[in-house]
Length: 298
Ligand SMILES: Nc1ncnc2c1ncn2[C@@H]1O[C@H](COP(=O)(O)OP(=O)(O)OP(=O)(O)O)[C@@H](O)[C@H]1O
Ligand SMILES: [Mg+2]
Image 1 (cartoon, rainbow, N blue to C red):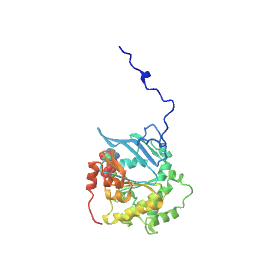
Image 2: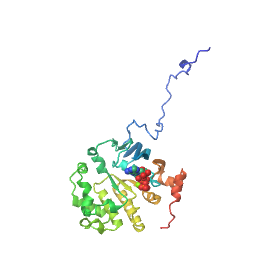
Image 3: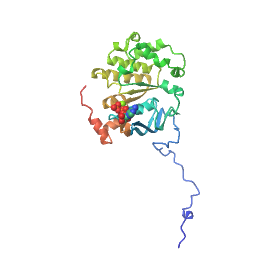
Image 4: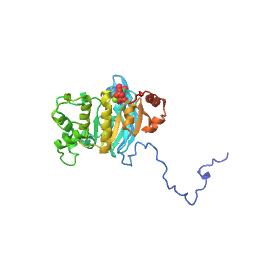
């Protein structure tokens, strides 16, 4: 029987190595989980999974999500109800812990860090929630609500110098177009749109780098939605904020975001530049979401 060719049968190696290409080959979109990120991105999430157990049933709210976000980007997260949008942003904000997977913020891994070591994240990332009626403490004066993040011990340690609370309050009230005496009043004395401005002012108080807004206008009267959206647009531009917006309303995302991810059943099913996804959706699911946008002439 003829001997099996074996390694000797390999073609001879060239004496001179082939010239190296000047341009590096493209990197894979997803690095292996073991490799810490080499480029200082703002956010990186790898294989992010969050399951909830309710009785005998396990719900996988988030399933192997990969995400990369750079400073100054404006990311929209859309998808049907229950698709995992809020779960994802809660993990990014460090308000919840993943079942598995990892998250880095500015190159530092936040997964598994104890609360006392999360000060850098608490100062840099602020959230605005859907309903300002439930997110603002009705018994606190607006001034105390807005300056509350500045009084947090964890956040205070991150701020470069002692912040003058009264001065910062005046600055953020002006930034969100609220009267300068608003600090002395209580939340119930304000309209829904004004209350959401208060929530935004509170988020801005510690001068965050990232603003995460989970359905920021869904609870508002249609007539004030555009005002609050325009305010967010202006603030993000003026303060160079990185923005993450969750919305089931694709018009909101088109207005605010340059990047888009589409979620379904805990997974990202489509991603890209907002304009590109709008112009040429790649999945029937995204197409259906886009078709659901009411065609209203403003
Ligand atoms: N604390 C929890 N306990 C049990 N299940 C949960 C919990 N939080 C979320 N879930 C489940 O995880 C899934 C994703 O929920 P999530 O709130 O992230 O969805 P969503 O996309 O934000 O939806 P919506 O648009 O309605 O706000 C849902 O099936 C939800 O029921
Ligand atoms: Mg939600």
